[in-house]
Image 1: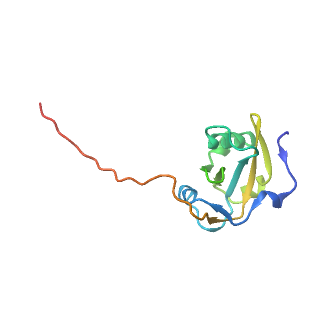
Image 2: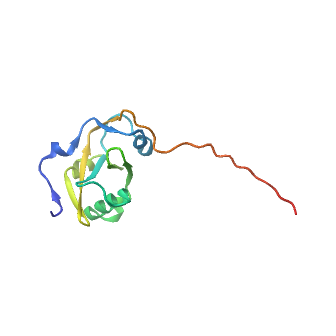
Image 3: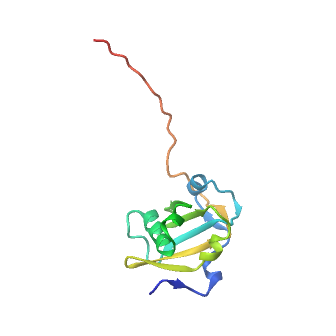
Length: 139
């Protein structure tokens, strides 16, 4: 399948998409309407170890490398989706339903209209108290 634009836009638009608390914190999102959020999924599940790099490579194929630097990326392991937060409004409208070939797999971009917190989601990292101890040794 070559890179291209599919025609069934409602199929590639998420409304009230459940997202983990981890993604909310990493991308500094709020519950409700979204104008800059894009979801990227691979058709057969992610095989690559680094899903974010694979998605960035797909964006790079769509546009120049400088365009990729205008995104913040976060992988949600619960639904196997990479979320991309653009700096400008309207980018999710422009790239809704695009399919880009990365290696031997296709990455599909979805527009995210609104999000909610996924039930029973927890942060995927733990907060730790860090204590600095200094020990002076005299010889």
